[in-house]
Length: 496
Ligand code: SIN
Image (cartoon, rainbow, N blue to C red; front, side, top):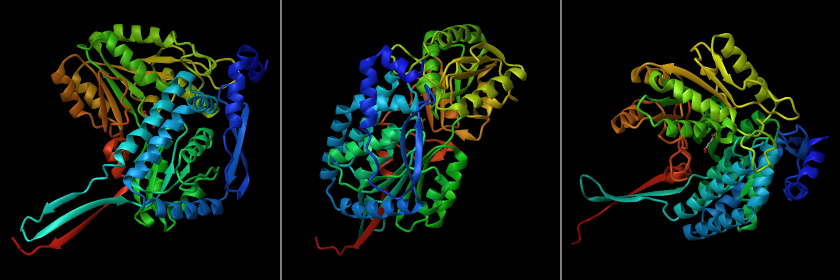
């Protein structure tokens, strides 16, 4: 039986709800299109909607509209921007059911994780509603005396926001909310794999009071033509991108033309270190979260696990048992803990990584294959004794495969962890507080989770070092990415 029919029979109420949610996704008001792009459900491979394939001319029209609206928005008071963003937060929460259903259908994440993402995404809006009131600036005396120096932080100007498919709502709000809080208009280009959540999110922004036109959404299957035309347009002053390092590098080259301020949240190859003195249960639980959140499809997912020899057998046995026990299936079923991966290309990549690692000597502890059913399902997989030569040690896995290497010493673990051009995130498990901080300091990454498999938090500066990116998202630092610092000096005669 086709999935749609089976789903309708198994849970008619949820099925009707998900169809209604899909029907509620707004179309684009921008009409210049070159055909449409199908949106597929990764759980079935079936088409669930189509979106416009906007032309480059339409993208430039979006720039014109967002630029005009942005200039008016920049003149509003911080209180006004804050109030509107608070109203957006409430609107997103009110519509959490539709948002979560659409997200699971277009991206394949479990419904539990979709609800968690709606809250995470809305929290960015609430956070920047609060930060909008704290735009910053300073008042200083010149060191020589005789003059006063004032710095201000104003909106940087029109922002182009390019978002990925793995967190279609949270990565959008993590960029749109600080842009609006700072006083910028924006053009958002979501990934064509998961555009529906973004379309609905932006519609809800408008329903909550964000002026029409201020946030434009463009969908296109010609991403390079879009970037080339839009990022080099004279009116654009900011680009923020989440995605791969090669694409980020290309976008930075385009941004260089007009010296456009850039934030890049790029590829990762996160190491996860478990030392002999770790609490075993805590380490297993943390590793499950660090590896399996979003089905392993996050840029901070534990990509390489380095486990010290004294704890390795127990850790690997316990971790493998948990991985093998995950309930996999229809992501809309609340019991399900692991849905499909995003598309067929992802399955092919995962198959290659397992075949390559085992051919080079890795031991397969569980999983390793694509499920024999419709959709793009790949088993939760554990590879042990993975050699350095395996492709999986240098490739961003983006799926439910854990790659484990056993290490003898702390020095070996740190050296192996740092042996990568990426530096986004790392995880350390130890009960020794000195070791925790010493190792965290020695790891060349922008973020470290200590006895904690979850780094993401709206109040944290999310971002990487080395080739994992530039700039930070979330926290007060995330607002600064959409601001320009200016400085005024005033000479002062003594009058008192
Ligand atoms: C990402 O995978 O790009 C972001 C993950 C997060 O915010 O937790």
